[in-house]
Image 1 (cartoon, rainbow, N blue to C red):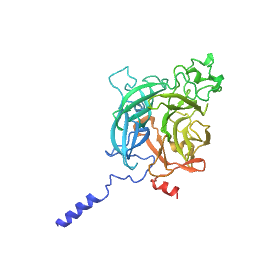
Image 2: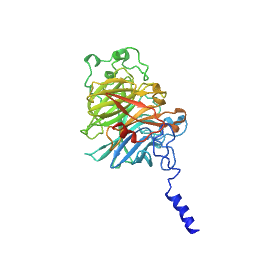
Image 3: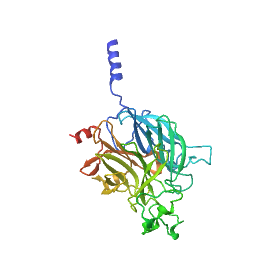
Image 4: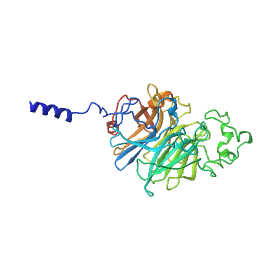
Length: 379
């Protein structure tokens, strides 16, 4: 009898737990952390550091109220990309100071973290809108920490590159027409003569608008900030200072008048690949892609990288990040969110392998997949 009891105990202890189903990615399904709670890291990005992945994203709450920031930036850790440990809140919004940039109910979106080997600091950037400004603030926020999971200390927010012209500005674009100088536009609603507005000139002194954003660190350690600017009509690529805390003043206007947002970027075989989307609010649209031989361009658009059913709406999602998989050649994961503005906390994650077809990149829907797909791709 004792032998039978021991065998039964052995079976339950040594058998795989039914509460641990993660040996593959299942895009669009609930993804539970080590506490059995759906991962709360929306609009996120991932940092690889000292043998682990760290996933930073917006912490949402229930209902439409959850589209504003009531908690802050959540962080999770993993060593295999399937199982994620809740590491808590990396950056908290401020509840008691009504004058603070990060006061409760601000908009804090698309946080990304990079590590500066020289300063030994982890640096977080995010898109910030002050409470009640209806996306008119359009600023970049910066926070730092000495430990990857935080807590992160808020440094400041600002608009990029005040007093600096982009590398590819034309002389006729340096003067904003008087009739447009103080006009208030919402993203995507500019008149047909967008280029004549010279929004970059309008914002020269106070700094350029910055909304949807991401960070990228190149092979030489130089860091770049990509963000939707000029009333969302044009993307900017800005080189950061050596400490990653500010702008160097060196930047480029790209995809002028194309209304690109949700930027994501990676580098493979010396080429830079970009994925973004159009501007249709919370509603999904067809993804866009581009390639360049240099971060400074010229950038050549490649069209929608998605193929198959629901390709025209990016599988009902929007890009947030492109993740290089450690230890695997040419292995990149396309990360996207399914936004649910009526119940923000229930946003689902769409992770798919990024496939390379010559100079093009391709995304195909998979109900379930694992990292072995990259080994097969390289055979």
